[in-house]
Image 1 (cartoon, rainbow, N blue to C red):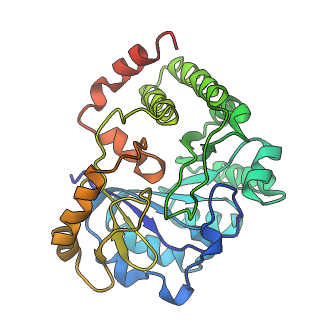
Image 2: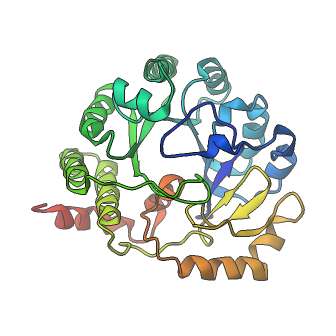
Length: 320
């Protein structure tokens, strides 16, 4: 089966006002956003992440998901969890979907960071409804920063208590977020919180949690400004499709570099084009040293070195 994974950005419209992302200031126009006919042109993938903006602002999202299910073995939708009824209805129709709700801390930190008063309670209510209806692949994701690192371990323990998946990333800058001033000032405190999370993860008997420990070790590496632990494979094993139809290698680059446009071209024309080769060269030369930030992270489960990662994790984190 193909090892290709894709992130499908269905809209740049968003109802949140997050401090680390200004995408909401530059919303896409509904009439310009990709539709079913573009999704139909995508290749087969082992994994697809549907993201935004906020995906559930699109009322035709069920139609997009129906088509994407023909392309991807597994689909996870990243959402802020605000549109509870739309999320529940879609998951009733497709109970094998994965849902990851962005939660940036406990109530005070979350609502401050996301600019959504009452947002924490709304996300918790959404998670509870999904769990009560028997959805298996549910969880939340946290972007670690100075304003929320104190809540990191508490959120992990909450996820563990309720049986939710728990994903992490850290603040970064890119053309995608329209942000250039994201940074972690309190590096040692943030790193100490991540180290505590790693210790919690390594206590688990689940191999998946050991992989997550390794991933979080990579976040520490990134915060410290050290080189990546593994080479970047975006543009080769992974891609982004944005609302305009542009196919990108990565959403974390300083400048947008499309390989081509899926509204105007076929997938093979784009993926095998001279422009795609040029973009891949730019990715190889990238010095940002990000660590599978955001939607590229699922590649960690399919990397050839995966069978020995948990051993490395225990060695790398020993004594930290």
